[in-house]
Length: 246
Image: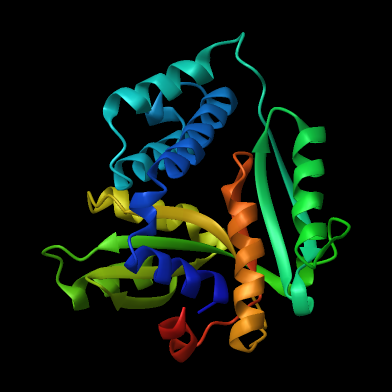
């Protein structure tokens, strides 16, 4: 699909998700905290919180960590978190879209700008990249004992645009407006996704030589390592041949 998804798949195969478990947990904790502040601590009446908890379970987050995050979100004295985005061009003109959650906007924008400047990119104005990406719902569901044909029919009924299978998991894509319908369908089927999120899928991508690809991915990795960064999307396409080299 997208360069972003391809690189995510590569890292997933290499076990990098396990290596960065603390970073993943940090992202999910922020999602839970914001969900609670927006809609309360009861998952039954808070769809965003239900989704965040489902992602936490998919990442094997301990129940105690989940409960602490919920309590943190319910604490009126806890620092306020702000969701914000940044857009820029990386090396060789690759478009990079950064989603952040922070308690200090000045620190976050300063850090993100520095990453771009030090690694051959440039931070731009918000809105400059909107036309390059589509907002899509992306779900990862373990196959388990599911009957593939029957399950796919259920997903199509809920608005699935694309369904692929890799490494015994279903990768499901929906239009942004069908994201909620897919969540409800999976809940009805009593299926917990490994992950579910709204992502920015590039409409067009660019392909680069190996050295240039490594340079772009270096910038992306550095941005992703920042504690304030939740997601990074980009227009770099990584072929299977390039993936083998990386």
